Amino acid sequence: MTTMAMADTPIGEITPELLAGRLRFAFNDWLSGGTPPFISAITAERVVQFQANAEVAVGEFYANDDLGYAHSCAVYNRLKEIAEQSPRMIRLMTDQEKLSDRQAGCLFTWAAMFHDLMRFFGFGTPDHEVPAAKLARAAFSGELDLCDSLAKAVICHEYLCPIADGKELPILFQKSPLAEMFRLADKTSLSPADEVDRWWKRGKRYGTKFYDLYLPDSIRFNLPHNYELRDQLTYLLMLFAVQPSDFYAHEAAEIYRQWALGKAEALCRVTVIAREEKISERAVMEAVVRFHRHYRLPLPEGIEGLRIYREFQKGRI
Image (cartoon, rainbow, N blue to C red; front, side, top):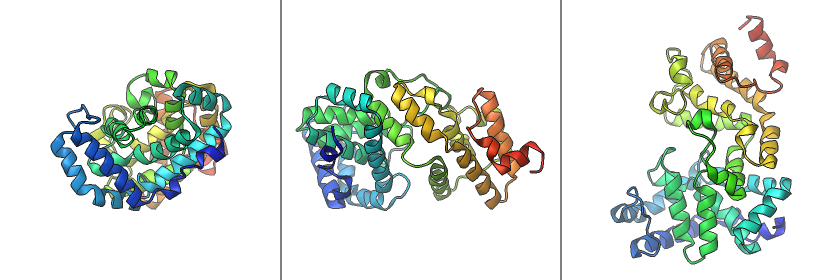
């Protein structure tokens, strides 16, 4: 698959009208029984609600900077970069999925578009992946190979690592280079520091406190089970929890390792936000360091070069 082939269906040409039309096709397909959703979260009554709310949802998707169209474009562009950087993975992916060049271009575009779209129809972080996969199947039900590949790309894209998810790497990533590539693109679509800003912006929109001084480590560090008790720092610890070894393919692990070189700068950004929020930078830094020690994780590479870390070690903050 070449860069030229992937340019057949650029994400920049997916207008709100085009997306709305694809959604109408998917919802009609569900209601007609063409591709039944087969999950209790998507009933016929709820699909009718999806249809009624589609125009508003599409508008919100395009207006949202952290999980909407802008994020989809970033994931799409990152997918293209990963394809160029990982010839073995892209070769295995195209051989396994048996897609034409046109279908491969469609796959990258629409996987990026669909993966978080169901968030705008009432689903959240814990439960939007399966509906996204079902939506992808229905939206391209006329192209069996393509709809299967789309579903495979998005079905586990939220998986981070055992520390954050409480379970080992899903077998899907060992079997599917496509799923591994898409998850990697989703997790590295922005620099680590920009990811901090993206998630903090989302946290402010939902009124999430940046740092809760009274949240004990026993809860803060229990990432799979503290969903209702998180402050924003708890969310950001997930960024530091993921390691290159949490990717199955060697090329994916190396690409993640290179991206992770920016985590020192991300930590610096976390302390800047703490200062802006009039929170002790030392308390925040201590929590991050304790988290790494608790799980025996290496501190971000290059952290020793940060002035703020050196001051922390000397007790100046």
